[in-house]
Length: 149
Image 1 (spheres, one colour):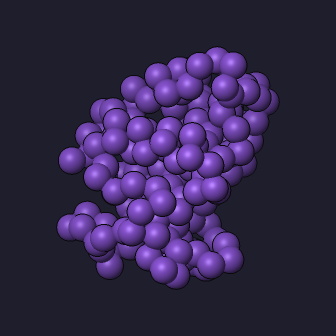
Image 2 (cartoon, one colour):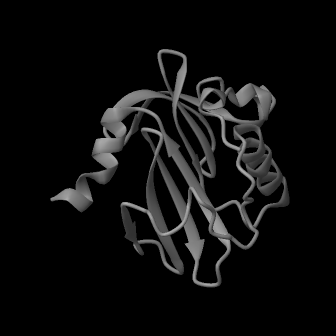
């Protein structure tokens, strides 16, 4: 089962060697400045050397990235996997706060999970395609602003 303390200990270097990702020193994630490490598909967002957000998307066409994404999810204690059918659990069932279908062929479900925002992107066929996890309250508010206005 998911362990919240694992998120605060997330480090991109535990999953990728330094030549497998890039660092962007001046990066804005949901209008919050920090440092991004990764690539477009798997991104770790840091403020003051602490991970505040993790985004995994558009990895399903690349076996290496699927494997890395699923290693990260496993490290965090989740038993679901990118590229696999998503099954409802006690934590992730129909208790989402919001949902959207902004991305073609995908519904994103927004969950408030132990004070964190988790967004699961699931295809119309029921395959988990994207994952986002945010710890920073300002980023969470900025991400959810669309639904509350």
